[in-house]
Image 1 (cartoon, rainbow, N blue to C red):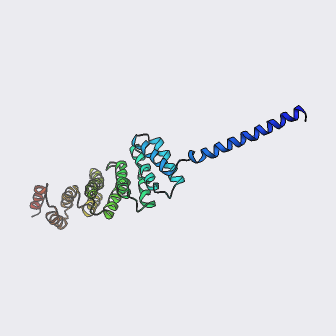
Image 2: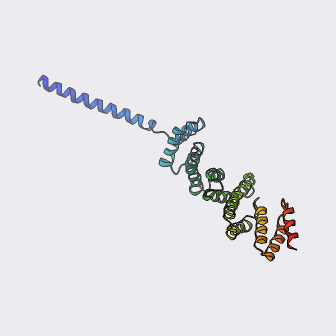
Image 3: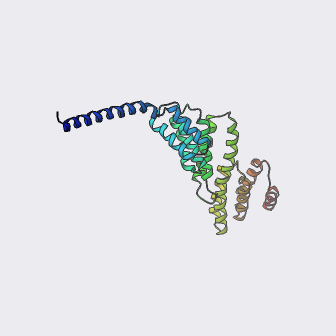
Length: 254
């Protein structure tokens, strides 16, 4: 056997040995390198608690993608929404909070997720002189929460939030009515005032709208309708702030 052949045989044996060693190492390290779902969640929750939202999000994404049926799937969905909320990403937060209820209706996080979804819509709701789509979404979300958690302590807070949001919707009609009054379109203004009277009798704009309607009916010489509106005022306004105004108008009708 020549020296060249011996050299080649040695190289082949060395190569095979190296390959076997590498394979053994990779096989030994493989299971250890792949974290369990418990480890992934623990790492994500720690990062979340530490305010490291980027790392936390990546860990929760792993759970949602690789372990969608695990015990931590609803946790990952909820904390994804929490990360959005903390970042001020309220549209995405609302979406992810709503996903908790849709995907995991029996989750312990449903209560918090539903309430915070409503808070998200409220935070992006615009002032009364702008579009009120998100105001309506917030009201509906709070109402849905109350329907599911009737006796919950947060239900009282939801009622408070709904009242304030309904005030905003009523105010929008008031602003439109005021615009029509400035342009002397009294009949158009009356339509907006009626919307407040009919749809938002529980708001702070109910009495002003009813008083303004009485004034307009008087100006338009629709006396019988004015008297009916005055009767409605006395029957429905429990703590009147403008009673003297109404009394004066009524005296003028006699």
